Amino acid sequence: MKNAADWRRSLTIGLAVLAGLVIYAYGFQVTKINLGETRSERRQTQLVRILRALAKPDLIAYDATEVQINAAVLVPCPAGGFTPSAPDSSGPYLVVTPACTAPGAEVKIEGFNFDPDTSGSLSFIPPSGVSLAMATYQADASGHFVLTAKLPKRESEEPQYVRTITSRTAGGPHLSQNAKDTWEKIIETVFLALLATTVGTALSIPISFLAASNVMKPIASSLTSVALSLLALPVGMALGAGAAGQMAAVRDLLMQSTLVPVIGLVASPVILFSLVRWALPPEEAVRPALGMRLARLAALLVSALIGLLIVYLLSSLSVNLGRGIALSLGAFGFLGLFISGMGDILGTSLGLISALAGAGVLIGATGRLGEFLAARLPTAVNKIINIILTAATGAMLGGGIAAGLNWLYQFKQANAVLWWFAAIGSGLGLITALRLPASTPLPIGSVIYTLTRTVLNALRSVEALVMAIVFAVWVGIGPFAGTLALALHTVAALAKLYSEQVESIMPGPLEAVQATGATRLQTIIYAVLPQIIPPYISFTLYRWDINVRMSTIIGFVGGGGIGFLLQQNINLLNYRQASAQMLAIAIVVASMDYLSAKLRERVI
Image (cartoon, rainbow, N blue to C red):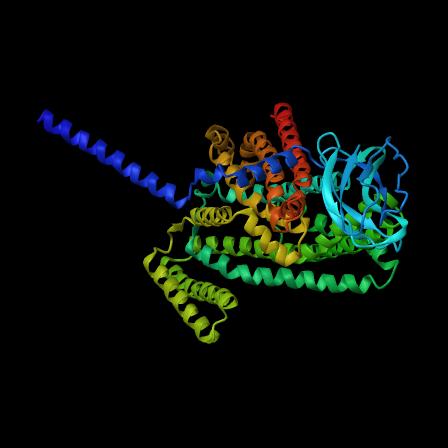
């Protein structure tokens, strides 16, 4: 038995070795490894040329002046011969031997004191001044060359010339144009990464709590509450967007005057403060009457509209103010453009913010209403309400999915598809209501957690390079596209890291705060945030370091930054210029790594 076991072990090892050999042999073929190509003289010559170019980055330049170098020659040779004047040996010069000869004869041309290892062309200049190409030269390490060339058949009693044009340095060294372009693009790269990290971090922090299992999984709601909240979602977004549209119209009306917007911006906060203070008084010993509660609710709604108007006015005034001072600030005009741009961003995003806020308020109200109904109504009545609500919710979700698919694929029978999806959704909702007990809480937190994780995983699977291609089509080639791509990728990466940090916090403080009767928001503020702030800072700094490196790559597809310049020089085989960009990237990445390490040491 022992021999049989040894035999099977040996056979298994042998088969494993054979399988590995076959796999690597096939991989050798697929990857087309050819060491013979690396030994070819042509490849080695190209490699040496590229390495030498990369070792001499184009950073320093000298002003140059063109110098004509002439050597006189007579064609044909006169009776008494011809002896040219002695050349100036303090610089580069040419010697033609013989100095006079017959038309079409060959002459020896020597060059002295040229720049080492340089090349150029030689021309024959007749009295007419027309340049006739003769030959090219290659100077050796000492600046000397010798070649034989045939003179054109041009006869003249006047001296004719063999000429070459070379350049001489004039003045001291200075930064080359490539070095200036590299500096400009590397600065653009750093700030591209900074803005992307800032935007991505701001969006990642709230999303990370939705992707944390220990925060979301305990959340549960009744079926009535979930159905009402889902039905309220589009209604709340529509109401919020409509309110923003109305306030934008009021803003446009006020902006037709110069003084009215300023007066409105001063008076509106006073009115807003008074309304909020009246609508949200301190604790009252007696519950106010229904009419008073409705009046206070109306006051809060008016306050929200006034708040929207204030933000819209601030947006418009910022745009106008920024444009006005941009020209007067001179070199600091970018500050005015920044104020104008921030106002434009605020005004553009306010409609979406208002829609989300409206949805949040209405979802909260309907959710509480659903919980109230589930707790107070009889089971049979709850069952009937759930059947109606879930059927309507399923139809709404199915119709929404159909509308999204139709937008993507443009169905020929869009209405039929819409009705089919709505019917299927309604049927699934009906089945859900019939199978679930009326009072059973649903793990809505787990559903939100799973959906958030799925979306983050999908976004992380798409490289920032691909995102930059899409954004370059949307906003045009440049650093803006790169900023958007890196910001989106940063959200996907940081939200995952942040959420895992939330999941790994100590449960003791969490339980202690919850034992005091704190709300979910208070629990997050007093028990979660103190434990996650240091690692959040560490992850953010590390992500900035990553974004600096990634921004050099997305420039290859039009995402701005130094990558665009690097790709351009590589495609044009300008390896000395590309070497300068590579050097700048290496310095910036090393500096960012050192800086982030020091900041982590001080902050964490």
